[in-house]
Length: 631
Ligand SMILES: [Zn+2]
Image (cartoon, rainbow, N blue to C red):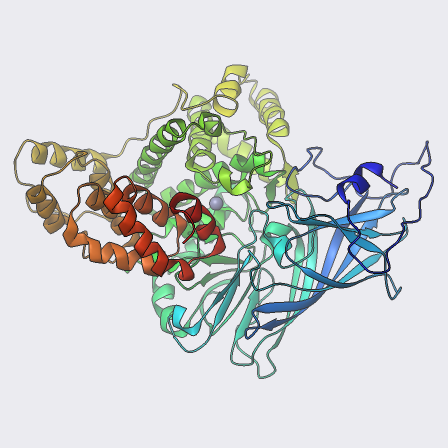
């Protein structure tokens, strides 16, 4: 018996579990007959001990109950145990465990630890080294953090309810008992029963049409970490884009979404030309109702996306390029722990920008990069102002914290500029060869920051006889803020916007635009407006860019901050409507943050939040409760 593990599990909660049989530990135990865990890093956000026993395959049988807002399920895990193993430990959060079986035994002994606010409860099951399967009968609870149950009113169609999951970072444990660490991969199959009027989809092989029984089966043959487990259930239809890609969305949205993402196949082909074959067979996109808290989630084979990218002019599709890029960076080569999150996101932003450059040209990609640099600089400023300068390092330390605290522009955009800086130091051709080999050689494996550094250094040394010096890694990965070596994007189109802005600041009118500005040019313009504006200036720029009337979520969110900062009340009704009907945290946080800078604004923000909160996902509520106080 592993004393250290037992000490983590102080309570016996299961009836009939009085003792675990102790086996004397063999001092010279032979090497475990299991695949060694590739990540040496310990994951502080999981109770699992994969060195003792780890999961290999999940068979999940579940029924989705919209009335009770619960999922009743059995999770049968195929496992692999070390020669001296006597326990397997799973992560759970808020699950009601009904029964546990090992192999063909009718009951197995198990216990649950005391709940931890962030990590939930460890579920330890007594096993033999020869145990092949562990079956857990359980149900979720209505407050399960990964699950968002939408009423018909919260959908576009207004007739049927909708359910979707968001497992990243450590919420999979709130709907499936699992070893919830990005360093542990498994394959899965599932059988899910839903109301017959609805379609079920997972991060797996998916149906394209509804069937009368409401029973759907799924298979995921490629091993994934638990944060990529995903389920959605709703009145959803499908529209094909190419033989290997298509769009799922509510019937009234699917046509618009398919038009918006018409270049999907070109993106996949472009990505493959850059960094090697797409390894997941199909690539589909599910457009969710508006309360989805993120822009997108890279669930394998089936990206979940916010409807806020349906701008009607295809100007926000870089988000799809981003989620697609995750099929390599993140889903194929995975951060070993959430402290290494920049490896997932920095590579993905780099790859996303390259896909956009390949499809739409260098100047388009440079606009994206310039906006990223603006976001990065303001994130560094605000993290430093808020007393968290250590969070501006790429390598994070999230001990005792929710890994969601690491979801800032640092992992994404500082990660991007670090990689771009290496690219520019020694040339794109060399860097591209490196990235392709990095993905190929580490496919379906995990990566720590500490393993990445020697990997890239050895690669450059052996392949090109180039020494990447220590300072580069020291200042970018372990240093705070933005290093001086940061590469600078150059956008001719933004230069033109800057010139127009200068004239306008000098009191001249901005001429009628000869070529209409794109979303990105307008965002750059809004980002560079003076800090304080007079009522007539606000009216002028609003008339010029039609910001308050805009249907584009990026524009509205950026303009909303300016409007609140300058108390431009003509925009307030639109801002309130936007906050109530959008659940994407990236847009919510800056607007609410701007509101609470004044006492009057804070009261307004709290009144809006009281109305909007029921529409938001746990992930957004968790951040906003901290900002505004729970209602
Ligand atoms: Zn991402």
